[in-house]
Image (cartoon, rainbow, N blue to C red; front, side, top):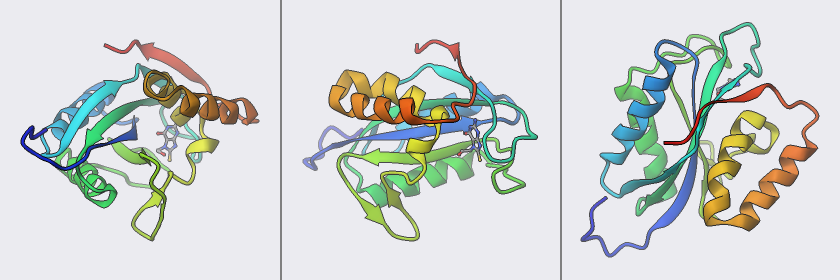
Length: 171
Ligand code: GSY
């Protein structure tokens, strides 16, 4: 991230998922590419979890993780950067809710709230998905214990906790 910027920075959280090709490589490469963008610094990464597919269940298991980003970009700018990274990696998604090489979701951007067609914050489905909550709680706890506690309460309330198994510890 540019150090000369006088812009205030914000901590944002993103969710990453892949279930096609070299899944780990897609996750790692997407964070490398995101970190190359001006105004973006990856400050924490969760472990990688292998998770049973949700939605369209007849597909391969996912690898999911979460990352904390310190950014001077506005929420829409960060989302644009994430969509660019998906394009750079030649994102393939043949079926809605189906298999994909890489998926980057903006989950939280500080305390920001948005409800446009382009961007909804907090992410509208994040509290319903254990594959999002488990890695997110892992990294949120270090920066914001109250946030982690709130996420954990939602995780406890989920009827359906799809299989979420730690696959590789955080580096
Ligand atoms: O929402 C992101 C794509 N996705 C996933 C995912 O990342 N992990 C799991 N376990 N199931 C999913 N279903 C969809 S769609």
